[in-house]
Image (cartoon, rainbow, N blue to C red; front, side, top):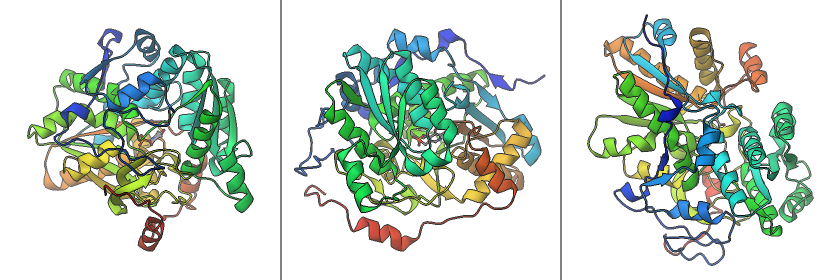
Length: 455
Ligand SMILES: *Cc1c(COP(=O)(O)O)cnc(C)c1O
């Protein structure tokens, strides 16, 4: 019998997060103050004081390895180390000579990789004496993970959930409430910015940019509250590096090394967490492709431009240099809700600029087709987001069939699709359609970019 699953012992759980910042061949561009438009000191801290101090330090840290607190490791052990699978079923279905591996982050109690950062964010807020966390969520995966993270440490949690998802994903709401957090549809009446947007447009469907503004405002308005974010920023990618570190050990067990790695990108945290531990190999000349896969409906890296933009709609968050579709971007209603953010992790954008990672975009219908092929060969029903990585991995495996190359392909299954069956229904009944974000709209949105003197 061949080994299909590479499982590490609890004792092999990484004890440190890997910080890529000191290893970058060129430093990241500085952040820019949203008010003064002046560059912020590279060593931090982030103004205004949105995050706990420890998180603020991690955002700018120059240490290569940062110890994972014992309490956090203990909670990680509920589902970590997560399995790495050899996808024999998928290989057979595709009749490919390629070896396909996938790392399965869907085994976390929240159903995705997001709990990897929710737990430490709650831990540091609690340790520094705060009582409450405010955050946003798009499709609900981050809101549910943060609700659970807060629960582990006895913190209150308020989640601003993008209104379309709030109405479309009632069971994500129920999860958030089951774990004891509060959730409201964003834009909401609970914040200044929410009331302003509702006054202009009572039917606003909301966006991640608006929900981030509401959560930030909530954190400013309450002394006992800190803000938490589920993707994009450096410390979130840092926390997610447990994924890539485990994969490296598991590939050793499997006596394999990838030729190409695929992961979906919304804000870039799952992809970053997977590939950052491989980046030194890549910089050292290893023949390895690292490919970020995004939706054609929100093509941040493939059609956006690399420039300075706000992270949120109200301009509370610092201005960052990244690929962006413009902070006023209102995403089309595709099912990969977790991939509908106007910007992208500055670390990943920088790596792309340096030529160390690649990006490609996929259409929605093709990603569901790939997810169904995966479900019918490996059994697991993928979330719509990682279905983008599955689509790219399948394409590569088919190319191998045609060329006869036995490449090693790895992708990240960052979440399951158990709350996305309405989307599968649409696909299976032939009602699902594609949406390509028009170039003119990208140009339009880019007209409202902030002017930054350093740019
Ligand atoms: C949130 C989420 C994403 C997108 O976020 P990243 O930070 O790019 O990982 C992708 N897949 C799943 C399952 C998610 O929950």
